Image (cartoon, rainbow, N blue to C red; front, side, top):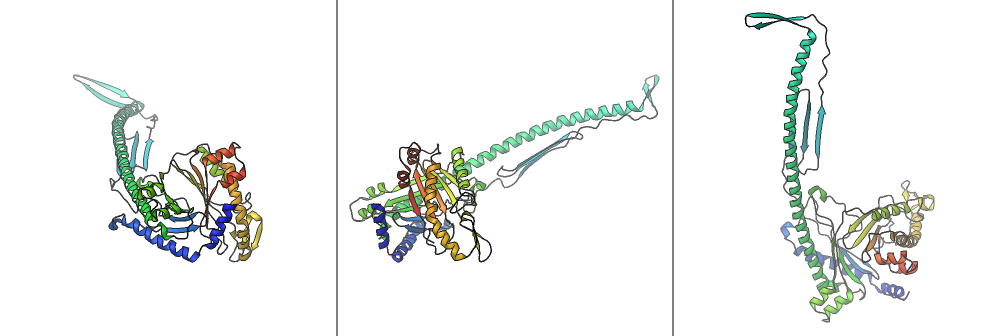
Length: 449
């Protein structure tokens, strides 16, 4: 309670206009330092830095998400489709397939065309003269025999054609295997190139961020010693990944942070450069693509909890996505709503069974519901988050929530709640009660709407 009162008292002393000015200046400085790390001729992707302040927590600067999109980096591929056709054997079958340049689309067609049996046709007998030297013999064959002989010859020809087609198909299979191996090698080369580019990019981002914190962190003068300055590429929504089209590397999560007190001590000469750098906390990790059942389950649980028929505050209509981050934890992304617009002037609020409410009434209700939403979300994270068996004690469970739009309502634009796996474990085992567990949740709010 004393910490809360102290935080509120400090927040009341903040000059909001000055804070906004300081953040905008710092955004420009950080952006400039980042651009200096790259060749200007190659810096053709946007590099916008956005900062926001949360009382009691600090200032967060958000960098662009991962750079790896098709419009930024590209690689030359084979350039042309590969297509083999096995010649069709009359009356047997045909076999063909097509592989595109990235090997992702492949079509195989195999059709069998059995030889239709020859139906005997009763016709007058046919006489054949067979010359046997000095002797002549007349052989009389029925039309059925003639047709049978013809069919035997056609079968013999079809067998030869089938054998030839089998060899052609075998040859095509070998070509297909060769093409797949070439495709795999190409993918490996692309992935290695992209991994290398990504690592260089991230190293430059981290280096520029450290320099910014050490040399220019004091530009934000109103922060208390306990508050932080954080630089991250983690946005408020799941990053829509299109890199798979060019075999892009895994997504990364960057976070570089320092306490304002340490930065001030460095400026005052109480810490050396090496000492301040050692105090800057860096997280540089990548997503894990392996599907873990408990993470999927938690996503489905929250998706159900915040449907309009169960929630009593805000609700969700979109799937709750998550990112598993190596040696860091898991981040869930939610978008919540408060109402549906019935027409230009009226709204419905399904969670509280209201219909035909005007804008003013709707906004008032949205504001009233926010404290209950935050409280309930914290409790749900603790209650159901303890089901995560794959989360290590040192890792964190994060819920990143984009809140319902409500202009001038005074509620945050976003809400981020995080808790360590060890807290969830202790709460699940009954070592700590709910109030103690709630107090260990880290809360980060976006700018007020």
